[in-house]
Length: 160
Image 1 (tube, rainbow, N blue to C red):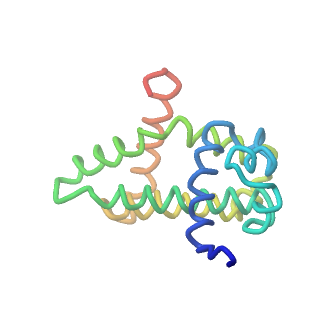
Image 2: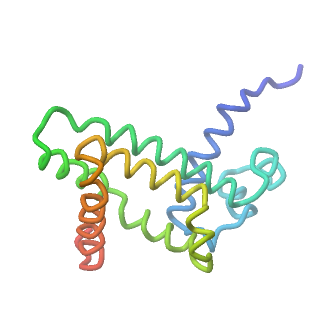
């Protein structure tokens, strides 16, 4: 009797586990062969679900940002400054690995390529919508810049 496979659940499992591989090894150092070996699947099985490494990375980004967006929604009924502090705390957890892989992924891309990149759009949309849930549209860009600036300085100082 043939094995019945829930392809969507299997794909989601691959994405979840591949996301941790990308976080540990970076984008450039990863290949479909290496990821497949890590996941315990053949390269052809991986290609069945994802036509290339970039599409797998996009799926991982969507998965991680959906999870992050859910985390960002739990800010509760607090004053604006408290919500910003809580959002910063949540973002702090994975900031080092996220910024490292983002820079690695964007390396060698033009400004236009970055501006049109689906993975970057997904990430930016989640960050922006999370801030817009706290502050006005006029304040959102500066607030997000302040959060990223704070986290980047902490990262450079070895504090996170």
